[in-house]
Amino acid sequence: MTHPLKLCQKIVHFGPEEEVDFHAEKELKRAFFEYRQAPKKALASISYMVNGKEYASLLEALVEEEELTTAGIRFFNPDMEENWDYNVPTKVIALMGKGMGWVERFTYKSFSLDKWDKEQQMLRDSVMLRAFPVRFYFPQSIKTKSIDPRAAPVRPYVPKLITPEALWRVIRDKGLVPFEIRVCAYTKEQRYSYDLDLVNNRLLKDFRGGQVAVRNRAERSSIDYLNFDMILASTEMKYIVKKAFIELFEVTEATAFDISHTMGITDQMGKNSLDAIVSRGLADKEGKPPRESYSINSENLAKAASGIEDLPLPPP
Image (cartoon, rainbow, N blue to C red; front, side, top):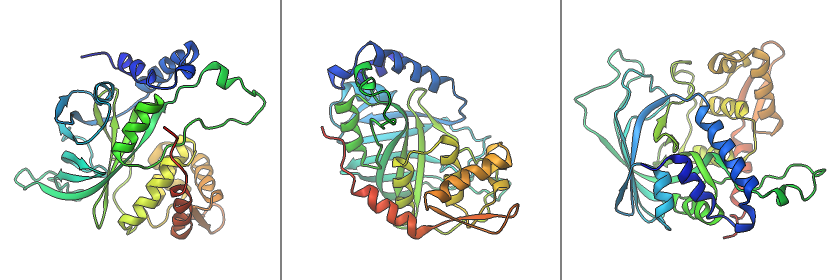
């Protein structure tokens, strides 16, 4: 199989010729190896079916297929010794077209000694599929980066929660190189999310698994999750703040200690991350130090998501 860096180099050249210079190619290599060396825990291997053709790598499919019409993501060799509390054991995600498809999954019992019921039947859900790049490289030439060195940094590309077909077009049109993407599957009642490592072809473990018990869960609708995912995709936050945002959204309330324990950071770092979310109006803070508690502001979350929805996609 072709080395993933070679595939990434082919993808970046789909972008505007004037933006893919020596500097951009060098930055792509730096970003690639930075991602590859970052610690990640995998739960399962992945293979793909794109437009009726099998691929061992989605990067390879992105190089070969100009458009995405149908797709299948198959998970195999699951690590059944690992903690799946915050992941959805799944066999297949199928895209049938226009952002719609289905998911075949298994039940995982977090509070049972025998978490995997090997006799169970697979469950199939009809879903709406959306995706966004989590870790990626967007090509910029040295000329573009040098236009005004005194100006504030500008995000060359703002990710959006969009259909897999639309994300495929952005990648091919802009030369965006995805290292990791999040696929979100929405049923009428709930949402399943999958973080896919495209460099190593692995399903990634949620950072909370095995670190925090499944408790104090907030009841969220599919619409709540859709709003949350739109903000998570598009809002520029430090990685540590995004992780705190993910944890806070799925509980009724949390403290700085809760966040710091899950992520293995200091209480002060946990507090700073939560305060960053509050400063954006996405969460509320109650109480006085050191007993402050934080909770998601669902109304502001919906308002922020509606603003993101109105943002235009990058021009082709």
